[in-house]
Amino acid sequence: MRTYVRYPRAVESLRDLSITDLSITDLSITPISESPLPPKRDALRLSQVVEVARGSGSLLSSKDRSIEVSGPLRALVPRLQRGIVAVVDGEPGHGSTTLALQFGAAVSALGEWISILDPEGSLSGLALLEAGIVTERCAVVRRVPTDRWALVVASLLDGVSLVIADAPPRLRAADARRLIARARERAALLVITGPWPAEAALRMRAEGGEWVGLGDGSGSLERRDVRARLETRRGIEHAEISSIAHAG
Image (cartoon, rainbow, N blue to C red):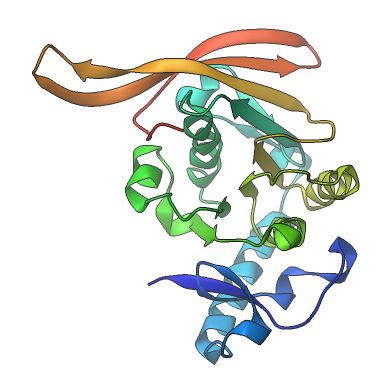
């Protein structure tokens, strides 16, 4: 089943919008004035998901403020601090999407909810599975209007443990800073792909890689090895991340 996220009322700033102002019906973002009202069961489904996510988040202890990372990402980031912003960038085709999805795999493996903004509607369920994401705990939101992007991200941070989002061009620094504050307040992780006009706890850059498994006219693709560079306050580290995920 596909799902839309709709706006039940007009909102003008991040401070005006909460997760309860959104309802799911078809994995796109659409002003409610442009489409019929969603069925009641869709609004109920969203409220149930949000309550479950909020309930699990409210039980966090001081030890739970960081996440022990498993899988390929562990080579660079053995632990993730909740409430931070991580930026993943790189030239097109160099693997930035592959790296970003590994954050989602690490968090969803813990049984927590994640959300991914897919502006072009090109992210498939197969790509999520190959990246190691638990799809039963993943909501994909497609075709988000640029002028509503920050509002939607802020709302999702209220209800899930991690949001992966491709930042739109010319994102205002003030909106970026508000999202940093929202992530910190909600103890949620925000993973940004693309340009980010504000500080970030860590920055990871995909520097290209290669597909493994194909021989000379034979064989099949097994995985993709992506070279990654991590920048934190402690310095710069390099590693090779192996994943089956689709090229980013």
